[in-house]
Figure 1 (tube, rainbow, N blue to C red):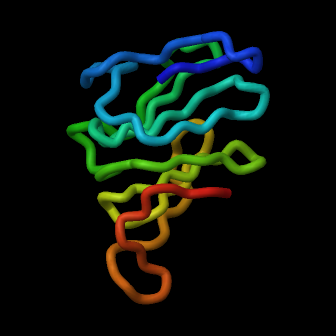
Figure 2: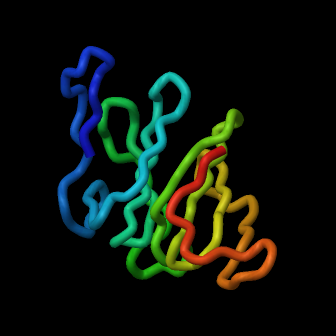
Figure 3: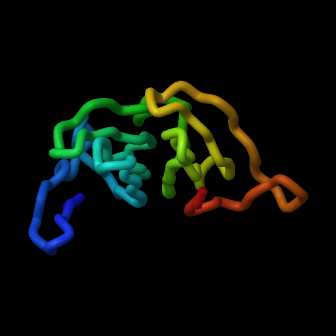
Length: 125
C-alpha cells in the first residue's frame, strides 16, 4: 500500500506481501482517519484489518488467518466518531468496530432477503 502526499509525492509505503504483522495478502480496502493519524487496511487474504499510523508504522491487526473474526474483509470506511465499518465479503456481513478494534455490532449475513447480503465488497458511511 502506497500513501501519497497532496503534491503527488510518495509519503509512505505500508507493508509488503506475506502473513506477518504489517504484511499483506490481497489488500483490498483502505480508510484514513481524520487528519491522517491512522490508516486502516482490509487485508482480505489474511482475514484481518491492519492499522498503521500516519507515517507507516504498523500498530495493530484485528483478526487473522487463525481467527474467525473476519472471513474475507474487502471494504472499509470510518464514521465521524472514528468507528470502523468493515465489509466482510466472505461472511456476507458488515462488522462495526471502535477505533481500538472492539466489535460494536454486526449486521447482515448470507442470503437474499431483507437485511441479508451476498458478499458485500465495500461499505460507505
